[in-house]
Length: 151
Image 1 (cartoon, rainbow, N blue to C red):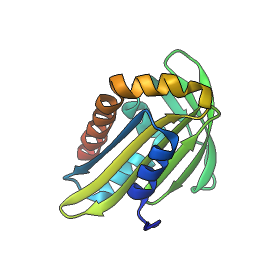
Image 2: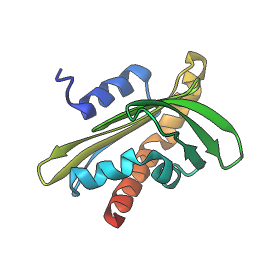
Image 3: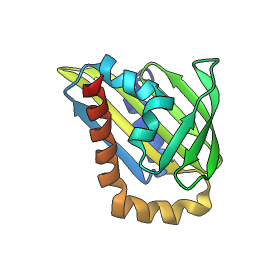
Image 4: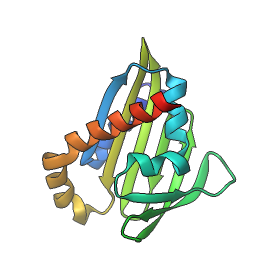
């Protein structure tokens, strides 16, 4: 396995977590435009995740930091964020989210994952994955492309 390929790393992580949401697509957009959207978590994540009102990312270390997600309902969750070119991994005590991108002929290969952390939530994750995971993953990818076109 080529560990320098972020999309491949995310695919392996999704398999290991039995992710309820995983999507991977070729976007006919330059990598820089796609990754500019993905890396701007504070401004863009609320546009990409329908139930998220805001995602607060403090200034500081660009590679590893704590962030606070605020849902539309007002619930909050603290996340550890690892962000580097082509790779974004966000983990809370309950949720793992990730995005990855690599340049690919004529555009960008982009992937997104969403999974639960506690094993006790696996049955709910399995049901979500079967009912909505693929559709939500495609919708997320489509929103990333739409936001990248606007930049």
